[in-house]
Image 1 (tube, rainbow, N blue to C red):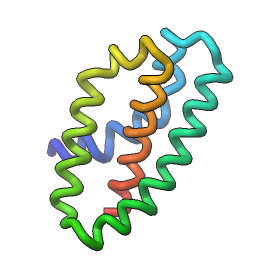
Image 2 (image 1 turned 90 degrees about the vertical axis):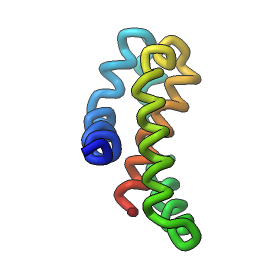
Image 3 (image 1 turned 180 degrees about the vertical axis):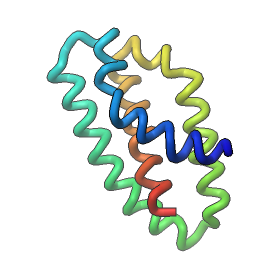
Image 4 (image 1 turned 30 degrees about the vertical axis):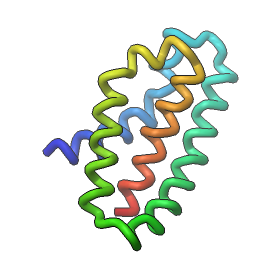
Length: 104
């Protein structure tokens, strides 16, 4: 149940509304678009990278890393929204791990 919410439902929801969430704290629409574009590029890189990682690490261990990272991001989202650099990192992790989850 925890894996379904953190690895599947939340990233899909976040991909759809990251810009709406960010607009409350970041007034620059162009910057939010760049954040989304960079994060989606990392989504592709995480898909590619997690395929290689799965050759050496079990899927269970990779899923634990993804779950822990997503739970930390969920708990600290309100902090990351205050600085666009932190929000960029949070978006990269969430959208990237969504790509990794699709691979596993």
